[in-house]
Picture (spheres, rainbow, N blue to C red):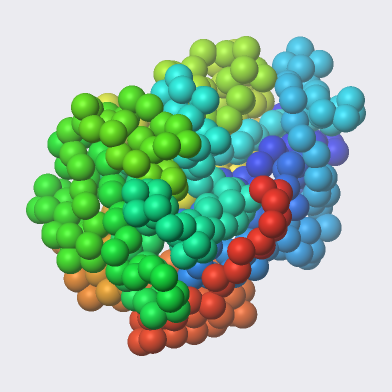
Length: 421
C-alpha cells in the first residue's frame, strides 16, 4: 500500500469510529472524521437523560474537543448521503465530496418499527440526545396534563406509560420511570397521586432480557414487579396511536408510549449498494471489509458480523470498539506491506442491565450477579468508560444523590423536538 499522504475517512464518531481513530494514532496517514452531529454520545446512559437522572452534557462531548490533540485528524460536521465506490468519494448532503484511500463506516443504528414507521410519532425511540429530550418532555408533560384533567379515564391514560421491548433499554426505562413516578414526584402534585401511575413493559417474547441467563431474566421480572412495573409477555404490539397501544387482543389506553423493541442499521448498505441482512447491516468479509472493496470497512451496529458459533456479534459498545481496534491494526499492517487477511474475533465481556436505582443484573458467563452488588458494579463499569474526570465525577455525584434521596435534578421540560436539553 502506498503510504504517501494516505487519506483515511471515518464516517461516524460513535464508539467504533472514535476507537478506530484513537487506535490509528501514529500511522503515516491523515484522517478525516465526518459526523452529522458535533458530539460523541455515550448511548448506554441515554435513557437516564430521558428519565431526568442526568443532563445532556453528562453523556455527550464535542468531537472536536475529544480530537483536539490529534493534528492528523480533521473533523467535519456534515451529513453523508452516499458513497461513490468507483470514484472513491464520500458524497455529502450539501453537494460536497470527500475523497478517500481507505473508508471506515461506523454509522450506527436507528430504531425500527418492523414495517410500521407510522407508529414513530406516537412511540418515539431512544438513539439520540434529541430523542432523549423529547421523551423526557413527554413523560413530564403527562403528569402536568394529568394534574389538570378532570375526566378519570383520560387522567388514568395520562398516568399510564407503556414501554415496548423487553431488552436492556426497555427494562432500564421502565424501572427508572416507575421510580420517578412513585418516589421522586410523590407529593409534588395536588390533584393526582403519582404513585397511581401505571408503567407497563410489553415484550413479544416469552421473557425479558432474552440475551441473559433465564435466572437473571426471572430476577429482573421480580425486581420490576417490586418497583410496580407490570410486565406483559408473549404478545406483540399491533398498533400504536394517540389513544394507546394494542398488543394481542388488549388495548391499553396510554398517552405516553416509548419504543425499545427493535433497531435497524444506518443506510450504509444502501450507500454502498451491497448485500445486507434484514436489519440493513452490511454483510462484511471476516476482516470487516466490504466484499469487492477491501479499502472499505464497516464496523459497529452497521455491520453483520458472526461469532464462531453462528450468533450475531451484539450491537454493544465493547463490540464496536473491538472492531475499531481491529480495523486500525489491519490498516497499519497494510501500510507496512503486510496484506495478509486478518479475520475479526469478538471477545464477549458480558451483559449488564440495571433495574432502577438499587438493582441490576450482570452476566459474565462464568459468574453472575444480581441486586445491589450488581448495581454498584454496573455503575463502576459505566463510570470507568465515561470520558474525562469531570464527567465521571458529575455522574457519580448525580447517582449518589439519587440513590440516597430519590431526587433527580434534570427534570426540565424543554420546548421543541429539536431542543438539546
